[in-house]
Image (cartoon, rainbow, N blue to C red; front, side, top):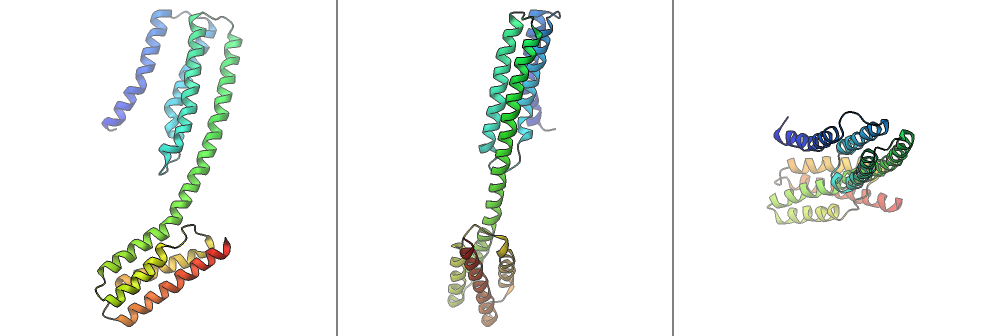
Length: 225
């Protein structure tokens, strides 16, 4: 366990320590049943607030869409804390009402939390799909740019630049029907990386093959729109 994790644990424990000290020092150990119910629900709400980060799916934008989940847990904790502190402070004796209020709040929280987590899952799936689709254009363009920069022959360099422009400007949104073409293009770029520019015929042949497959990919995607 690193220092950062230890500090976060200490920070999380501060509220529990302060609350429990005040609860037992100011109120003693003898309380109405409703006070103990309130005590349990406050701890439950705080526990949910602490574990909220572990409910989020790892994604490149977790910090953005995870905010809504944090907000739901935070609002729930604040409401539970305020309402139950009132119950404890006034020595509220009706335990049934205390249970009912807290159960309703927990139910509303549960519905909102699960709904937000489902929405976040859909968002994460969309982001992951977009990043996967973007990988073809980004990866192939990067490799072709490197090949272009390392090609000294002006004529060959111009041909590499042409297919770089073709792939760099290709549709990012992909489809299962073009996955084989994308894989083939990546393989051909690998061949181009290994081909000696001294053998210009082979070099041009690979470039033409890349161009043909890239144009076929783009054509298929345009037809499916």
